[in-house]
Length: 285
Image (cartoon, rainbow, N blue to C red; front, top):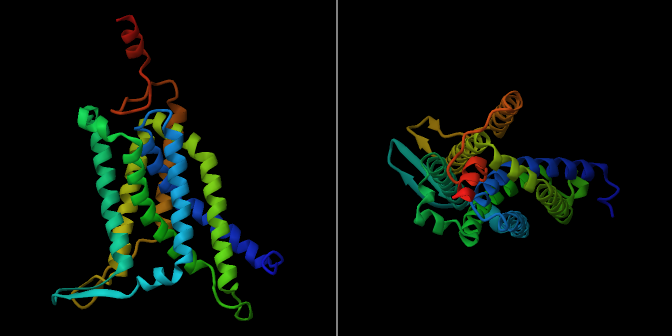
């Protein structure tokens, strides 16, 4: 009840909800591309399961804050003179997630341009269960990144010290996660349809995932205190720069799409765009 009458709590809730939605954009892009390879009737199910998994992972991690923070402890150290590191559990998860995201993004771009998924092997891999496994793996990494950001934003100090207390901060973070996931569920369908209907948006989305993968690699290296020599330590890439480049690129592409509406888009392999001429030819045959 104290939180309901506390304007600072409402501001924190709105701020964190907005931040969760922004951080969830890369999740929606990945969901759109992975679900776009499934049968049309399976695509909404994959998106719902993916977003529910994202919400579940975040809430579970919030209840295990002590365990999450415990992952900051050094697991092992490396000292080779010219290179040193103090590897933690968090750094391993985030660094591994960055590698997975880079691999998945580059392979998706290759498949869409070269068309290897049209083979029997590619078709066999385009199942709902395979998509959910990929979504779950990436959600785990995105959840860690999201929760670490939330913990840094919401103060767990007691109300007397200007914070919201442990229970209050936990309630704000859980509510922000639930609201943000509900909002993303509402817009996931239209966003996925738009992404899969425009090849340039698909390639841009995959390029953004490469950027995010590089950011995760830098963040994982920073958490592991990667140091070269005595003075050079790997730093993080500010998320503001990354998301500014993403929104600016999308803005330019929206202008291009508006100016060239009358032109037919390039057909990517495994695209959900139906080639009308090809469809008519098949019907005639």
